[in-house]
Amino acid sequence: MSIDLQTVKKIASLSRISVTEDEAQAMVPELNNILGFVEQLGEVDVTGVEPMTAVIPNTLRLRDDVVTDGNVREKVLANAPQAEQGFFAVPKVIE
Amino acid sequence: MTNLTDLTVAEIRDGFRAGDFTAREVAEGFNANVAAAKALNAFIVKTPEHALAAADAADAARTSGDLKPLSGVPIGMKDLFCTNGVQTTAASHILEGFVPTYESTVSGKLWDAGAGMLGKLNLDQFAMGSSNETSYFGNVISPWKRNDGGNAALAPGGSSGGSASAISARLCPAATGTDTGGSIRQPAAFVGISGIKPTYGRCSRWGVVAFASSLDQAGPMARTVRDNAIMLEAMAGFDPKDSTSLDLPVPAWEQSLSSDLKGKRIGIPKEYRVDSMPAEIDALWEKGIAFLNDAGAEIVEVSLPHTRYALPAYYIIAPAEASSNLARYDGVRFGQRELPDGAGLQDMYAATRAAGFGPEVKRRVMIGTYVLSAGYYDAYYTQAQKVRTLISRDFDRAWESCDLLLAPTAPSAAFALGEKQADPLAMYLNDVFTVPASLAGLPAMSVPGGLDAQGLPLGLQIIGKALDEQGVLNAALAIEERAGFTARPEKWW
Image (cartoon, rainbow over all chains, first blue to last red; front, side, top):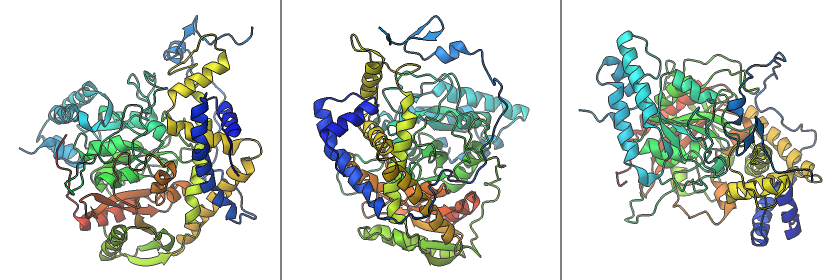
């Protein structure tokens, strides 16, 4: 498997990270190098092996479906780059 | 009079209780050391007033008899733990200026135990790195120097390199670390201190900036095994806010410390003897075997056949989880925002993340995105998760013939800053001995074993069964007592 420039650009776009042409070109050998390394996993016979989901056996707990805090709007918005009238503000999405 | 900043956590706790000195004197001593150590760049934010307030509370408590386990002890907090009212950045630009309005469970427990905070410690950006060269706030420098007459600035290890550097240089007696693939153990080894990653689930991940959720685990770092036990007791415990938190009581690890290993079998994993291993690391390992033998343990060879696949599995699983966890950094709710002229929402996300993430973080997010993307998910991610099952089974089989494992912590002593920066893959290979235990969620500890020919510390690693922190601490104590490691960096900063 070899990653080309177009693939790097596609991954960058899926990752929501803008890259310049130069940056994308520099990433081609870097990402190929790392993927080349991890590809040795293909050698391992995993017939009948379940993928690990929980590293330490633990039961997933459920809690009552109730509000545990609430009324903390100021705290929630305290770090917003832009907050208006009690909401997070973002650039216009629909023209 | 004793220099208070040379004391261990236990010595500070006990001396303060006995009235040998006040908590304020201790806090002032460490605050002064922190202020004078700018050259190490171990702290992103200093909080001398927090340390003094906790000290004053401790001094008041001593007269009223209302003492807590860590009363009088100031510590450093890795800047991956959210601290209420104190900037928390994970050493990233994207979180620069972020001031949490809540406290992580682990840091909250430490303050409840009476500890004071000297400041927020530098780290590899989002805990991604093994050298502390990926922080937005500059490299952390190890206080150690090679004895070759050169003056190369050395890496303190990563990602908890700020914690490691600060403890080694006596800027704090103990600190928090987090370990995803070795980020407590490798830096501890590089600067000649101890650190334990407990069983996955022992310490709550709530309020800790997430890197790879199935691997991340908080733990303490300090100069002695006893201090690690004291710190871990304060940090561990069930937290309903973390769904992976283990609902188990916290054992009295400090009280049960014992270096008598009679009846214990120590496994030596033969696959850890990699071809390129320096002779010094091999010699250190032999020394560790002799120490444990002397403590009464029986040494047996064991096999962990899938060891060589741990690192490639890790470098799929960790980036995959990181790509998902770091999706929350989009410039909407907190942190930095980049809004180019005329940009829409998608452009804002992409520009914010491009400006806010460093190169190593981008690399890992993109690798993670790739291995999780349509068409590659099964070939990479599912395959890695299956290999992870096999690695975990290797350990389960090993426990049929031994109680604990002994291995080196890292394949070399600390390297110079910049030495491995050009080749991400060479950097990743540093974690070869620490990653397998992380993948299996097992408790593992690094303890100093000696110095190499250049006068740099080397660490030995003990890996235990799930929930057997006591066994790990006890074997580490046996090594500590026999290694007699007293070396410390000569002050140049």
